[in-house]
Length: 155
Image 1 (tube, one colour):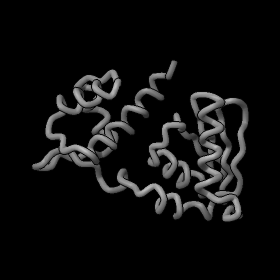
Image 2 (image 1 turned 60 degrees about the horizontal axis):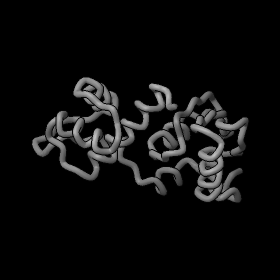
Image 3 (image 1 turned 135 degrees about the vertical axis):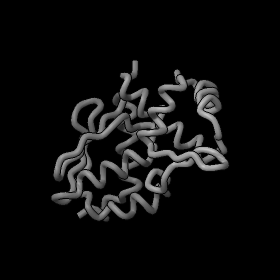
Image 4 (image 1 turned 180 degrees about the vertical axis):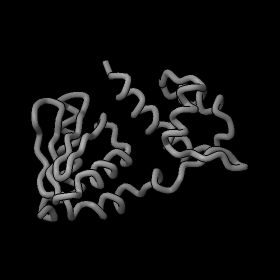
C-alpha cells in the first residue's frame, strides 16, 4: 500500500502530465480528470499540488512553469556526466553516486522525469537514495538508468 507521500508524488506527476495534454481551466475539472485516472483527489489537495508545482493560471487554463516541463532525454543528458555509480541497496532503494556537489541536481532531474518506478529521492552532496515501491520496480529502474545513462558515459 503506497504511503501518503508516495500517493501525493504520483498525483503531482499525473497533474503535470494532465496539464501538458489538456487545457484545464478549473480545479474541479482537474479533480475529475485525476479521479478518472484513479487518484483520490479533492479541490483542496489539487490546490496545494498546483501551488507546490508552481502552476500559474493563464487565460486558457493552468500551466506549469518551464522547470517542471522537461524533455526527459535532453534533461537527463545534462546531468549524466555527474553520475559515477548506480547500484541497488536492499529491495527498494537504489544508490546513485555523483560528483561532489551534484547529487541534488541529479535528484531533482530524476524527480521531474516522472518515471513510475520512482517513489521519491533523497540527496546529499554526492549520494542519492532513490526509493521504489518494491524489488520489481527497483529492477526496472536499474535497467532504465543503465540504458539511459549508458554506463560507459559514467566517470
